[in-house]
Image (cartoon, helix red, strand yellow):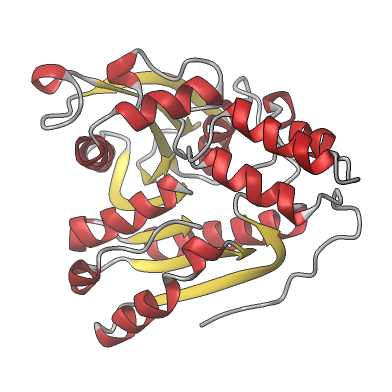
Length: 305
């Protein structure tokens, strides 16, 4: 089903849609930072403050932390896990950020998958948010074979684009399997992810079958049409209103899900752009981000407990 229950807040930063479109190209690696700012400067010459808008869209990760890494409700650490068939040489260990709720467990588990730039501070914070809700959370860093997230998204995006993409998904699959089998895991597994991570969440649902119990992808590419029949997880799919490339995939994906009788619901959030959950840039829309996350936690509570 679809939902249009969230109104765009009047306090949202007023950024010209042409600048949002430029940023979408930039954040998906179609243009580099230099070209992004160059095109924004050209728009500025037409009489809109596009360069200032473009600069404001760049991530400010100090704003993204909502749960401190020292929060007493959780315990966080960096871990490694084997990843045969991944981007590391000879099954080299992958690295991830594991966050557990305080207590003895076991806990239902949630894999948190990053965007197309590695394990940045925003994704680590999302993992902490999941843990404060009572889930054992693992956020893998797909850039681990190249030394890990480099500390900025520009270099991270370039690094991720250089990786073998099929092997990168294998690294995420191995993370899901490792998390499911963890001594603190109840064996119930969910996944959520954003942008590239949203598409990978759909991929894992189709690849893992009954081994995955719930998925909540955010504005991610649809699973391959011939793989949809393999999905057993309950799907909760989040879309931005303005996100042409991703949203264009939905009608066919929805038809395939219905044909295969897959449990699913989808929500479109009015007044939002691709990336609306990411609170480190002005694309963030607080009302939609909160509602979508509340729905995600409720979804996991329903299917993983």
